[in-house]
Length: 271
Image (cartoon, rainbow, N blue to C red):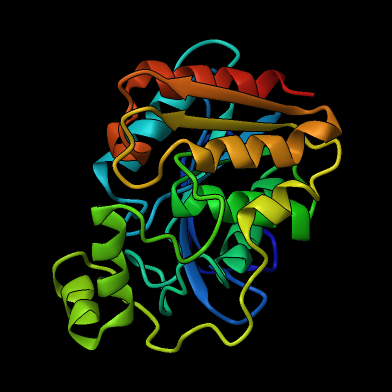
């Protein structure tokens, strides 16, 4: 087991590292313990792992995240999947920084996937997780492809009612109480000192790493200029693709099995 995996680990019986489900507590580079789970493909022996980064208020144990892992691994030729809870979510420690230090969490999960024996690692992020996945690939490297679903292109967007509500939850003391008690998300009360690289700028730094941008035309949080901006930023590198999905809302809760399956197929074949 990789040195980053601490505390709870389970890998029930097979000689091959991806032959059975597992879970672990991963220690990030900045010292936060992150809860992660591993779901092997239905047909063992896959050398590809999809690391799934959930949206804000999600977690490993949320039904939409579990469903995504199940869909991604079902059938011949499918990858294994690593899911994890961002800091401040689920059983992970720490507090959410809403897309900033979460890149450390994703890097720990990618490292664990590699330690399990997978040779090709791709990332799939939803909403906040999509922004983190793009930033992680630009800042850390080490992944073979990225899919960003319902991701914002820039920070501080308040142009829709849901985003104005989200800013209230994140920025106001009472809002953070609502986040902790109602949304089961613990939010860091400290504002960003140094504004992290925006996703759209990170997309331009991906180079030849394939990027799939997926967005719904019915997304209530981010209008279509966000995915189009991400795509345009990465497109000059020649490895970007944009899907605008009719009737699709927002992130993992709205993504149906068919869309998740298509995204998984794109990730496994992207070069």
